[in-house]
Amino acid sequence: MAIYIDDRILIEKDPQEMEKLLSELKKDFEVTAEENPTTFLGIKFNKIKLSIKLTQEIYARQIVETYGMQNSKSTDTPITSDRETTKILRG
Image (cartoon, rainbow, N blue to C red; front, side):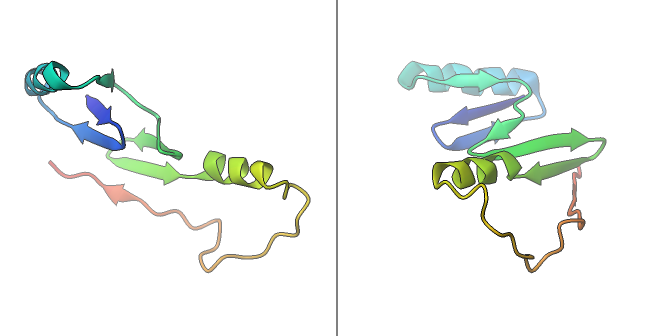
């Protein structure tokens, strides 16, 4: 389960511990909780087996649209777009 507060996200393996924390936070704050969030602050994350893939494609497209740059010429970035970075979860 994960909880985000303003611009924070909390992750806890034990659902009972998360419920305790959530109850305490609700005493003083307005809290929104999602069990399986897929986006956070413009970052999309997808859990695949023991890894999490993070992308900002949606956020980048929104920026391009906001500034009217849909027809702008693109350029390569320092990291090729076909390179995938993964973080293995342990524990």
